[in-house]
Image (cartoon, rainbow, N blue to C red; front, top):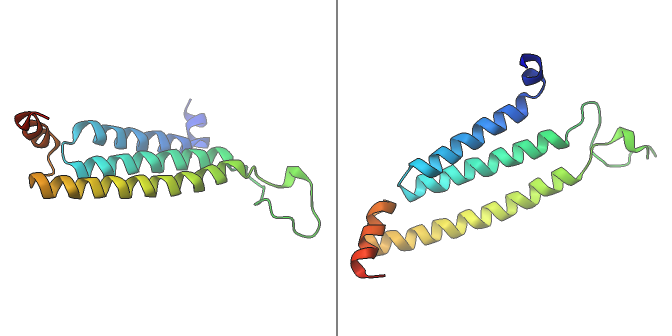
Length: 124
């Protein structure tokens, strides 16, 4: 078990980061802290994909000096997924932050429990 953990430390770190982000998402009532927790979870997933896509001793799939042997290059699909995920998460974060600003302007608080109580009082 211990030797396996040492060789897969990147995956272990990704799981720990995901747990930290998920715990933050569940336990915090401040909207900004929830967004930070979601961003930590996103980062953990990107780290996990990058770790799974990396193969020791191989290089990026750019043909140099006419070497076309597939055994010399890493798989580019996980890297593409990570880049796509980063673009999507930046967009989602921007949307969440803009909604948070609107909620703060209306309710003068970032506490999700307080906003929920005020919504119930308004009858929405």
